Length: 421
Image 1: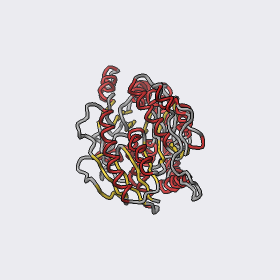
Image 2: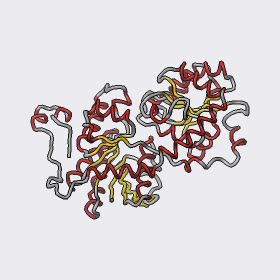
Image 3: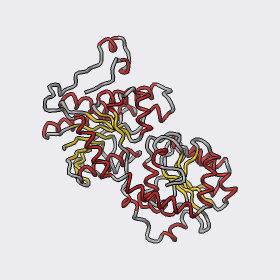
């Protein structure tokens, strides 16, 4: 098959898990024999067009004209995505378009209708889920764009059963439009570490200290504040514990302030953004890798920690609850409960045999359940379900928003039926 993917980000531009997931999926599909082109935003020191592991990546300018705010930046980028996507669809016989998240919804919709191609989307997370509801006009606008993308798509892919339930509840996506396909991980990407780990470790912790590691964005839904709240109880039982908090985000300064006011001092190290080699090395050194999310559609970071041979502790929410089984391949705690988190960290640090057993089982699970080759085949199978049959006279969509809903100033969600092929 020949697939055109649209994505807001693609490595080396990495803001969240979306970039890595799109890159891994597109490259896995190329390896199993499909032709994939990705149209995305530009990144420093990257060519406008280049091959990346078998995938043709096209990067468009998102900052000209200079946007006045974030939403305008998104819409300007979509103009450029439409331009490049139109060039490619005019020149090549693509089978379908695969859009990733609301940030590319406008261009996906335009290209689908202009060229009569089936549209598949992946919803990686929702604005409702990230914020536990919709509380302002910006959030409602983003949520409408998410709904719009699911409406226009022939098939909606999500990464967990939790996300399937969320999309059915929030957007009323019909069950027969939804497909659950998990994300994966390449364990080989986490093998490279600093050559002398023992010596390098001294930059992060004293020889007798046990490293409790967090890697990820510093945003409310990731729950880093819960980890800091658990620290006093952990230190009361394991005074040799050392908390290493890697990553950046809008809550970074607030979290540093929380640690200061709690008197955690040198027992917490804020590492800032870390490169892949540093991340891999920290995973290999960690006595526990902790991900205390309040909301997590899938939680690929847990798989990455497993690939780095770190024993993992996660909250029992969303995709985490489906990838990490308590006392099987990791430990889980009650989401939002710092006391529950502290108890699990103490147990992991105290019972070294348990930590080794969990880590060994996690390594096996990565190969058996989260291999990108298998995921690529499942994705292609989902694509094929969207392709028109040879005797299907109505290849193009037969639906549109009702004129009444638009005339009344209603939202897209007021139309009577969710979009179908």
